[in-house]
Length: 171
View (tube, rainbow, N blue to C red):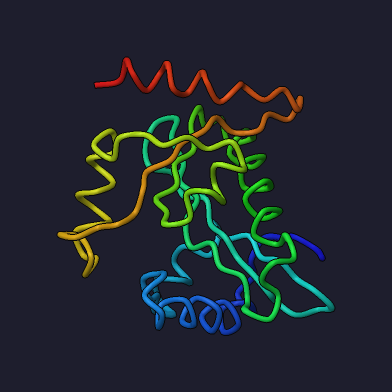
């Protein structure tokens, strides 16, 4: 498996993967235009020359990034591809100078295994106002906000308990 930045030629397979999740209500659908406008945020997983997964890292504000649109083709599920995508996105977050990475997820155990910890959704009101407003599940959201520090190029990872102590002091 190879991880790489998304290219314009990846749009069709990415939309197919994302749409499969959207049809099951697990991701919001993306239009070709919206995907192309955020393509630089995307990392793809490729196996034997085929795009089999994706994830995006989007800046939310000063020092905060979000892992979004994490999806793996169904026939490749359970092979660690999602885990590898998130790990690489955390490295990219460190390279970009983010102090914290957010994920809004229904898969709490998956992200907990990657060092994310549950936090209050209200910490990210700007994100909720901008992105979540258009979501059909907004008034009855079942996603959990989780955060962790990014991976640093030095491989020195801040212990997850630090996130908890910072979280308690956040307004």
